[in-house]
Image (tube, rainbow, N blue to C red; front, side):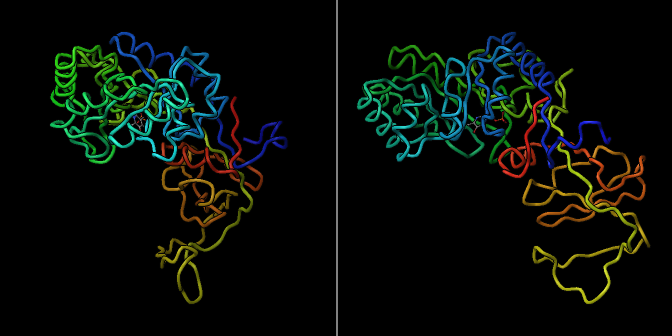
Length: 361
Ligand SMILES: *Cc1c(COP(=O)(O)O)cnc(C)c1O
């Protein structure tokens, strides 16, 4: 645990395994290819951190998508296509047109603003119209989408690149034959009505990976937008592991700054803790308590798990995590580094925290 190079390292640290990430990206892109589905890789969760994007490019990724214009600017020079995932703010229309060739859209006023911005810039911007199919986040209602496609075709700064849907986000609704079939039907209707080519029918996010794995992506869905699945090796509809992908691309590391035997029960008059909560405790006598230089200012502590068997988080404040280290397999001491598995939430926050050092190995 206390490696030779330890004193040159900075903690807390989010370690990113480049080879594992490259492998996961390759496998996901292969899965897409086998189903004849195009894929934009989603970079928002890791803030389009360049070394991570570099690894994805090495794995063969060409298309990138993000919800934040700041991140898309960071992607400049990488890949062949940049997609804005979140319905653009009217106030950012000019930036979206400048930095993205495609955006997902669900409001006519925004489409007009994008068209105006594109005309001003002397360019054309590709739009994908989102359809609401049950999850109840963004999207035009199915009964207005065909008409909206017609309106979009009239906007001279835009080209209608396709339609799309999103699942697994607000309502937790899963994309399946039925709702994805509806999306394909709508695409057909738009093509017939206006005699246009609709290059992209974008089915959704990492929740659709189970369909890719089973080779059951409905005919006509030819595009997905994937982030979490390749970063964590799991599809997000049933939370199942994706065959042979790594689930440990990321490792959060924190240093022990105090390690002592103390009672398990606070003593004195009990008020609230640092977050206004009245904590409750069980008295199990004296335990070994390790304090880590890691806290709520750094990440979401509810979605990290110590890898060391026997170690258990028993409390935390802004700057400290307290571990019960009584039953750990190795004897923890001050200066040791403790490793954690992270999940999507803790990874996102660690990536944006200025206190957490990112290290690609
Ligand atoms: C974040 C996002 C995605 C990617 O979701 P993952 O679950 O990380 O694959 C896809 N589409 C939209 C619209 C998003 O906002």
